[in-house]
Every structure is written in structure tokens, then in C-alpha cells.
Amino acid sequence: MYGQLFSVLADVSPVVQALPPDGALMDVTGALGYFDRTPAGLADLLQTRLLARYGLTTAIGAGPNRMLATMAAETCAPGDVHALDPDPAAIRAFLRAQPVEALPGVGPVLARSLRRYGITYVADLADLPLATLQRVAGASTGRLLHQRAHGTDPRTVAPAGPPASIAATRRFEHDVLDPDQVRQALLALAGDLGARLRTGGRSARTVELQVTYADRSTTTRSRTLREPTAHTPVLQDTLYALFGALGLQRARIRAVTARVGALVAAERAFVQLTLDATTEDRRVLEPVIDRAARRWGSGTVHPGTLTKAKARPAGAPRRRPAP
Figure 1 (cartoon, one colour):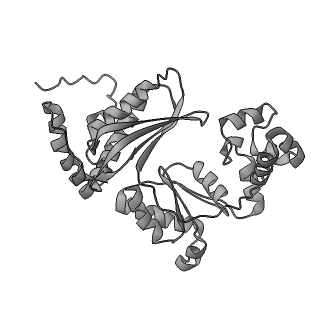
Figure 2: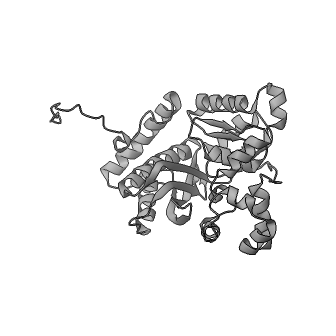
Figure 3: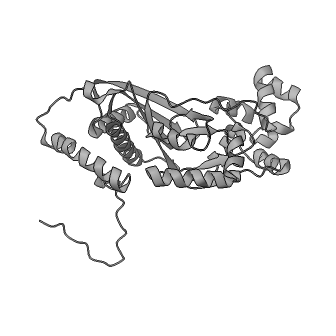
């Protein structure tokens, strides 16, 4: 589905750059006049089309350059639009209030190094003389940080389509410690990727898991399957195994991303038959779920594990399961 989204984006602007696993950059300079809309109005148009065609809820940020637009998008929840006020004073206030990690290119190691010098927010960076910042971070890195702390980003949007892989991400509302919550997210990712593979008539040979922690650092693990598959339980078991192999105990997890690659046409893949009735039943059920999703929207039918139980009123009797 990630590739199909670009048909919607291309209807608005021909200058679109893929940002896997689930993002994209757009230069809408010409589109604003063509559609006679403000950046926020154009973002609303895109969100409406994506929701109508694919049932997707998206977060969109808008700004005078790609860095500021990306940072604006990071501050809003799915379904929201954050279009920065073009007034230089407003942009300066927004930028100075961000943590240094929000700047592109500032990873956990560099952020820790900056904090040792009391540099926590972009405002701290912007207030430092260039020579001092270069002494702290190095000549080239210091110059780049100085430019970005003042809102300068010469990079342009380079038209580029999605890579030959499919990815999906689940970001938690709060950093989580419970492995069961992570496994539930992995189950949802496996269902999403499996449906997209089958809908696109493709199978995947590799599965990759990326775990993003509270400090924005990441760990990535991958596995090559014995045969290409679009079968959700296989993807689920592989993701569970990759996560279990990390041996995480008290890690605070912010997001998980699953990616399938080495894609081949479904007719070129073979299915290993099993004697397990549950596995075969689920394979029979998958096309039914896919047809329901195409007709009534994604998420219409999903595993019971992903269904949140309704709260039982205080004092209400528990119902016994039917025999």
C-alpha cells in the first residue's frame, strides 16, 4: 500500500520523495496556487483523500523547508496538521523550543555529548558562537548544527519512489516496558504487511524488525525465510522470534517497525503444505479477511487479540462463556 499512496500524492504535486517506512516529502510550491489553498488547506485535502481511498489517518507538517516541515510533522498526532506560521519570529520560537534530538542528524551519541556541555534545546545551540560549537562538535558538524539551529536547510525534495520493500510502523502513545504490548503491536504489523503483500500479489523472502527506544536509538534485526511468503502467521512468528532474540528486559520502547523485502511475484513462490489444521484454517481465512478489508476498509476484521475488551461496570456479573 505504501507504493499506492504515491498516486494520491502525485495528484497534488509531482515532486514527492519517499521516506521509508511510512513517510514522504512533498514540494507543494506550485500546488498552492493551482489548488488555491493554504498549506493547511492542502494538507487537509491530502488527508481526506488518503482516508477516503485507503482508510489511512496521517500526520502532516508544513514549513518553509524540508527540515522544518519534518519537525512540524513530528509534533502532531495522526489526523492532525501542523502548518508552521511563516512569520520568522514564529518559526524561530518553534525551533528554539525543540530538544536538540529533533534536529536531523543529531543522534543519541551526539545528543549525550552536547548535554555534557549543557546544550539541551535548539535554543542552546542557536545562542552559541559558531567557533564554540565547532570546538564542541567538530568543524563540519558544528557548522551544520549552527545552520540548522537557525532554521537553515538547503536540501531540496528529490523525487524518488518507494524502495522494493514494504514497511509498517507502530508508535506507542507512551514509551512502553511491557513485552506483551510490543507483541500485540507486532501482531498488528504482521497482519498489515501480510494483507498488503497478498493484495499486491507478492511474497517476501526477508523480514526485518527495527525497535526504536525512548532515547531515539534503534536496534535492527533481520531474517531470511526458507521460502517467500505472504502468510500472516509466518510473518508474525518471525517478528516474535526477532524481538525475543533481542533479550530486552527493562528497555523503554517508543516504536516498532517491520519491513519485508526481497519481494517476488506470488505465482513464483510456493507454499509448504502442513498437517497443522490451525495453520491451514488461517490460510483459508486470509483471503476472506482481505476481501472484507477491500470492501469495508482496513481493520474491519482482525485477530481477537487486537480487540480491546470493554470495561465491565462495577458490580456487573461476569458472563460465563457459552458451552
